[in-house]
Length: 319
Image (cartoon, rainbow, N blue to C red; front, side, top):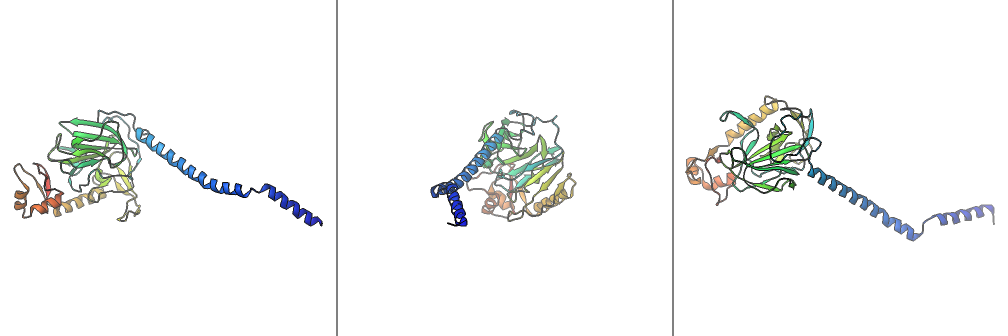
């Protein structure tokens, strides 16, 4: 036997000893995807655990305490110079698209309106806007009436006022879209509606900067809070839900170009949409006759059922 043949035979024997058997190879082949799946399962479990812990104490890095009897208790707290609010994973608190009163100064009452009012029928389901933990469930006869306050991991606290009934309890952990109450007319209120506020550490943010009720969507993926009355909207979406123009839209004050443009849009919408404030003793029939329309059209335009009743102070759209 030649020397080369001996070397070749020895090398083949060594490789045979080192190589795994066919059964071992099969085991390794089966084990590899199992390990990959287990890592994926572990990752999901860890994420769920983190989310659960985050909901138990939402935005803990931002808020100094948890107090379940006062709505606004952050008067002496320093606001961050900048805070990025994640608006993804939202749910509209109501499916109604009609805003009856905007955020801002109310000459009639000589005070600021620190939220927005959305038209609603008594008993309409009001839902949590984001995942979070219920901080306040209270009744204020001269204020919000039946009210719910939820703190969210994104740093926001949302306020839902004038409810006819609570459907949640203090310290309850809720997911976006969970029912938290029914629309009503309790407290200091004129007509059934939802009073909705968005706050960061007690600082009011105009909900219209975050939510587009007409489109039933948020205005962007993120809102960057920058001190009192300032903010930046990021990641605005187009109609297909894809990221559109990422140019920052700045809101510096009520006199900013964006605020003026919004005011102009509101004015144009108001010109196109005519509303009627229900007076005592009026019916859908009398209102329809007054404005030259039909009861069926009034019901369609305002989302009313045949069994729905109207109340003094309620705002109805008639054209």
